[in-house]
Image (cartoon, rainbow, N blue to C red):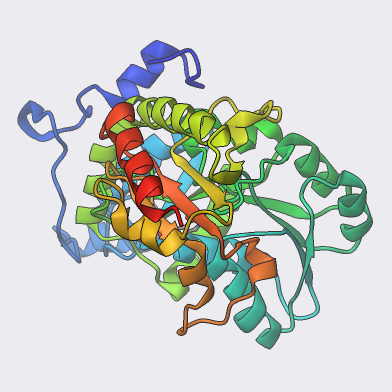
Length: 390
Ligand SMILES: *Cc1c(COP(=O)(O)O)cnc(C)c1O
């Protein structure tokens, strides 16, 4: 454990490295309870479960022990009373938002939110009569002007293309002052480097497909917060939208959590070093990495995802094709290094785009610095830059 970890080291070790208390025959890894339903020994037992007199699994869209083990660990890592896991980060986002808005309501969101969240806000929510206004998350005055009357403040910090980092505590305070529920996408920082609930945010969510899973083998999401809010989600939204996580996927997330602090520490170290070197490289016009400036209050560290904008002397297409260790691919948070060209994302045909909304420049590329080692990755990047000079 590192000093940057939010939990006391003994507690963190218990959560991440130790055996799970109720494991079968002392198994060091908890079982995958791969079942859709659970049977009862008697009519009375079934009745008691349906009446809520006993808490036990009935059907895996409701309660599943493997999923529950993940939810409890994640809640502890976020300093939350409870958490609810979902089949994707987008299922977590849509549930957290839809639980709080109805016709005539208004949402205030920071600019440059995750593109599919932006599209949810721009396509589905208007059909429900919900309006979303975007405000620069760094501009607290503009935020204070936009918030009166808003039902929900939707935050993402740092954002995941231009990596804008906000003063989350101040934004949460403003939301509270104006009676808006605050929700934040904390995928970039992970629970190791930022715990928004402790900064006053009402609900924190993650795409667990990223650092929490950490091995690029699962798509999942999670929402954490106070018990009353999670109970509301569990009772009024979760069973009906049905964005359930599979037990096997929850098990993969439990495995990912064991090494989360070690991994994000390694991502931080390599990515920061590479970002610093790129920031003084003659071919690079801009490096968008929150760690190159003082971090806002509450953000205790940085991870592996950042973007650069090339000057005219480098062809981004030739650069991407010349990379060997960095693979062309979307997503991030796994062991592997990845590159995404901004120009390609802007041409995505299947879904409407707006360069302005995401802050994506066609001369930018987004890098995810994986765990291959700083010097090997630096050699790959500099060789590709040299091959792409024109
Ligand atoms: C990937 C991502 C999501 C969506 O998560 P999925 O698991 O892909 O549905 C949400 N927010 C951010 C910042 C992401 O990077």
